[in-house]
Amino acid sequence: MRQQSTTFEISTRGRGLHEFTREVEAWVRASGISTGLLSLHVRHTSASLLVQENADPTVAADLERFLARLAPDGDPIFRHDDEGPDDMPAHARAALTATGLSIPVAEGRPALGTWQGIYLYEHRRAPHGRRVAAHLIGE
Image (cartoon, rainbow, N blue to C red; front, side):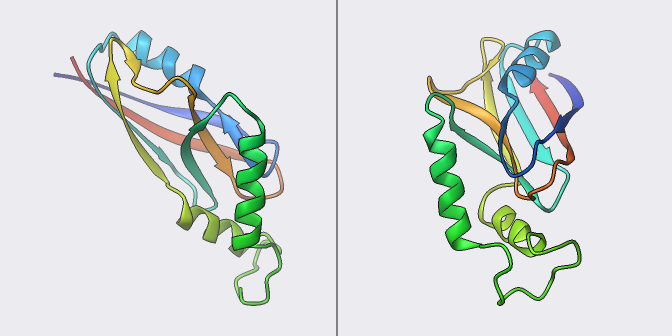
């Protein structure tokens, strides 16, 4: 059994999905591990990770409209607004999605479906630098 770890640095353009599947695939391929388990964890409380469709961009737009309905910026139910009206809604969005992913690795690649990609979901409106910790174990 072998292990590898790294950190992916992702610069976002603001709120929305930011795909980093190719970077993850390249790192897994370079590890030499052909069968195992990949764990990803975003190290921020106002961003999340998703495995989502990467073929049709309307999926991302629909997902954003849905989350905007659930956790709108400036909603008066939120008291935490230290960094602006999108601060607490960003935390709520992260709580509704996932901060960690576990993806099987088969034949030296993350075992994703045909239309699946790995995304960081930025929940803040402004651009941010985000860090995703990655750990791979296998043989």
